[in-house]
Image 1 (cartoon, rainbow, N blue to C red):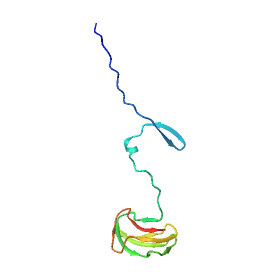
Image 2: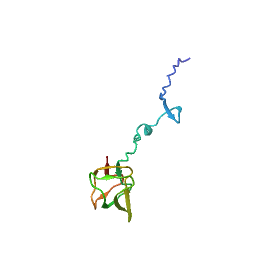
Image 3: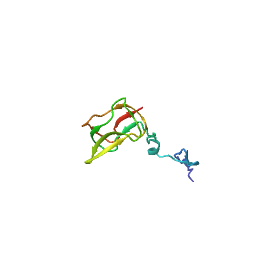
Image 4: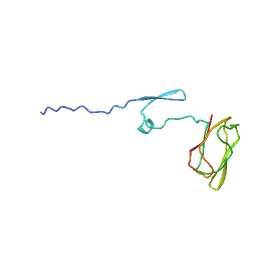
Length: 114
């Protein structure tokens, strides 16, 4: 009769993490994709950006000008349409980062308010 020794089975230990969703706590394994995701950053309404690529057609404000919510800041052309960019809040123009004729890319900051 042979003397057989069993090798211990190696198991990969998974660490559980707690995840809180609508005040309910879950224990789960987090994926690498979830762990490496970019974190949520609240929108800063004083940083005005364009939502699609286009060309600046007309600028109505300059540095130091006081603007009210809903006031027209500039016009840019995208997909053969003129788009008005309006001020989302009251403030003072801190900088205008574009000039007439500039090509702008999606999410490019064009005007900063303070």
